[in-house]
Image (cartoon, rainbow, N blue to C red; front, side, top):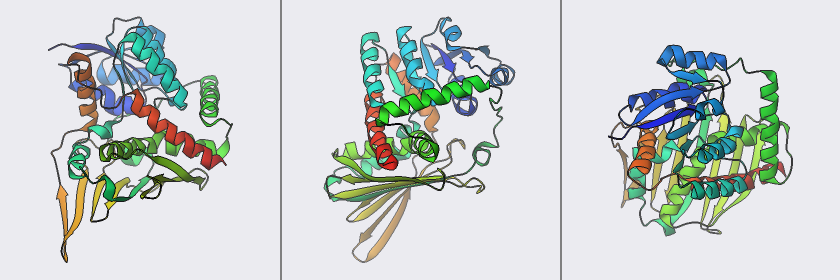
Length: 363
């Protein structure tokens, strides 16, 4: 079996808890060469916990002989890192959001075409077995869709992944933090066509672009399967000092409504994420576990009626881990030429909708 030499750029929480352990688990497919991060603490964790080589910068990592790069750096670094990796002739798996500005996605698509390499965006929910099962259940039901609800309540990270070994990257210099905030503002301003700040900026970059972006991608997958592509954001707001954010989309003019809400519940030790598709004769509901639990199945519940008899069925399709499945999908796209499930075009569609949501929230 071909082994791909891969590097990881960014050694924060998702890299420490998911990407690096999963790459090591898939050692027959991937040879994890090194991890790069400006944080000495994060690099020390990678060295002591996993016995890995580390670099202080992306430039140093790319100087090694690699086939692919996994980007798990802060959001504002994603676009430049993808461009740099493609310029070095590498395949790329980039964490979401791929970008803030849809125009950046267009630029990356051009760079990908020129490089002839795979670019996959890390939307692991599209690799969830329950997502795949849902596609089968809703096949042909597009004209009967009436409502989509997305509800997400998220506690502090410790309540989701306190059982994992983790070392925060809290030794990054104040200058680097300020530079990151400034670059984020530049990219968000380009996406929205105006500058925003305060709670609106925090809600946009946090709730919408970092958290609900997963659900936007998921719902777009369902709508594509249903043959429904006319989606328009009609209302949005950030509330409770950016602890909450909500948006409403109209589907097919007046056929259906899509509503989604994210709320931080810092001191509630319970993560909840629910995506429900309401048709005229059934409800198909996905209830996701906290993403860092691993191998916990997403509940897929179907409610329907047979005459006056109400029926509710729960479907489980194994215990496969989506984080592992997305790495396997990345490998298959590179080695076997399998179609990329979550590519640049998907991310562009997501971020174009989220940008329209941001403009409504800032109005």
